[in-house]
Length: 581
Ligand SMILES: [Ca+2]
Image (cartoon, rainbow, N blue to C red; front, side):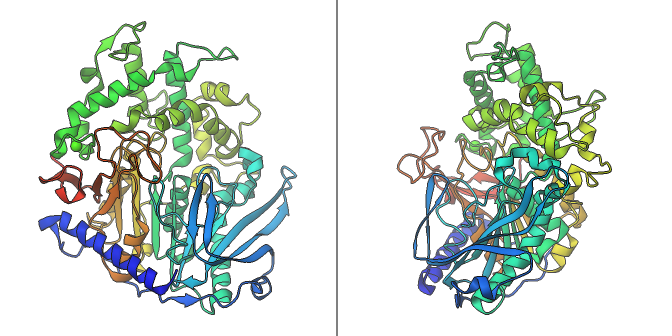
């Protein structure tokens, strides 16, 4: 990227911010927050000095470079997408290769780093999703669905890793205690100094500013790094963060048990077919009734429930959804048993003593879609049983039958506590290695001037936006009632797990984060766009009544986007305001 292009992009970001500020009308400029933290200096651009000889220049004990190559500008394949990239140096390798004494497998922390020729002076740690296990191309996510830009294109030097295990192992890496720790927090701790070392050798100096970002498990990595103060990151971007991931996985198993009670079909193994518990029409009915009660509470019936807090007081599943007999499946009603099952899942997993095991979930407009179904009825009998059996329990429960049988046989009284347990071999519990040690204790972060932006789709089926809101409330309390001086949380109404759903799910949080860290411009809102017909990557679940390019301001919690009048498809017609009480 040329300096001119970079400057133009920054100009565009500033213009977007100005629009965002004007959208907030009389709210801006706000008084400095009680939790304001020092502003850090801006990064200075640099030039790549070396690529081919980097393997020699950056030689370090225990580090093996397997490929170092200069790449011209051009697309980089990321999954099914082609992301444009500037000329850069690609460095691939691994460190700390070892053979496990526990399972005999060979482990290493695999990584790649992409170092742009025209460097913006910044480092970005790309935290990946799922169980890790794959070195996803180091492009650097900026947040939201089908992002139109990347950290690499913005000029960051980006690192990505497999977090210490090969994907071919699936969840079985969890049998090795060190692989658990690497996945939980240690890969970030090991790779961040290596990335700084590579940057120093490549550009002649270290990064001026460092950032970490990701969604889902990547959001978890970012929050863990924030709370552990790993790596001294200046800016942290956490999307749909699974910061209580083992608890969320247990809640998934609890969900499977509830769906099984109302399933009407059986699979080849004679077990309940979870998909049959709720038809798409039945879940669409619930979403429609949520909209009927809650959509207009933000000032406009537009298919978006911006005031989720007010919705909690206005929507009642028992009252607002018609009840019918269990044999009626016309999509116009739910049986009493189905209501009970859904109510239990949304109230949150619990054990037989009614002790909460995870979090409640908010009723929202996005529960009728494919992503919601896939997580609730699919992952709860595939991914979650595997992760709980191999990675999150001490001792692991992998000797049991897996999959759906594991989910249905999981005892919420006897088995759920194993995510907090240790033994002679597994000396850190899953909650210890996977979660922030104290998620609301971010005093170090604040003191050194770091800033954090969190976003979460309120229709996320696996990590609850309620859990993130509760975390933010706790953070507020710990900071004299206002944490907005260094941490802001942006709920994304209707969005499912990191993207999709009836939502304006395309946005750039990284640009505003840099402006906050380096310019002291706190993000009073972030503009998000819909991905309707005609856009580059169409969101198939966008309601037909929406403009294909609808925009909305995402507002920092607890503020909500309230309609002020004007074009209903434009962010400029909304302002961030306190929720209705
Ligand atoms: Ca609305």
